[in-house]
Image (cartoon, rainbow, N blue to C red; front, side, top):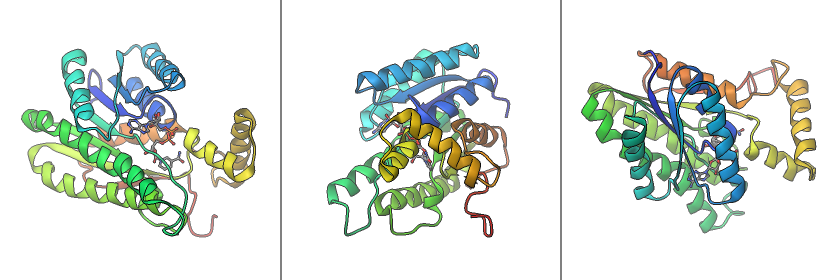
Length: 266
Ligand SMILES: NC(=O)c1ccc[n+]([C@@H]2O[C@H](COP(=O)([O-])OP(=O)(O)OC[C@H]3O[C@@H](n4cnc5c(N)ncnc54)[C@H](O)[C@@H]3O)[C@@H](O)[C@H]2O)c1
């Protein structure tokens, strides 16, 4: 599928992996609607930087305030794409939150928040986009899961459970809608540079300065990454572009890890 002139929504694209996806879709020729909370001045500023990045690539960009936990926000996202971008060909459900802790360590509230954003939010965005895609008998959905949605230990029970859910939702939805012309896949990243992952590094190491933590992340990638560097948001973006372009790829969970976790390598 050629991406030139296609219209895409990327949730959680104010920063991090979402921004990398939005920019790579724009590089491939898409106009992009960025859906994010925009609830704090920093997120709003970050979203405007994402928009500038898309526009610098010669594509149209829009930001819409959206909390994926709210069904009406997900529906408004799709409506805005149709009315202001002129359609919707690609939906990337990327918005997500992290919660560290095992079953006996996290609260029920924390469990519900993670499941609400990561799994129910993904479900609601897919459901909002589907009527339009089914009517057109075409469209691509890419969900962002995680390698912890394929295999996990006890450190992040809510997060892993939500991501196993995203992988399952992807497979179920792909089976449901492939015969109607809509393709659904997911990407499973591991350890990508972003606010989420560098924030976790700050917690683990006690580094308080974000710039120092970012430099530590780079060093860690150079030292321990099998390819000698860390995985960047643009690497996930290129995987999303490939999934959008590849017409016979349906219902898969694609790990993008830079080789981390391969037997014998780490
Ligand atoms: N960074 C990693 O190493 C890594 C690894 C595997 C998977 N992931 C997944 O990639 C996705 C992006 O993560 P990231 O690392 O860029 O994180 P991030 O924290 O840097 O960015 C997440 C974005 O999602 C937005 N968001 C959070 N809750 C939202 C809500 N309810 N509605 C709308 N937007 C919301 C945030 O405002 C933020 O802009 C997430 O789904 C995450 O689970 C990340």
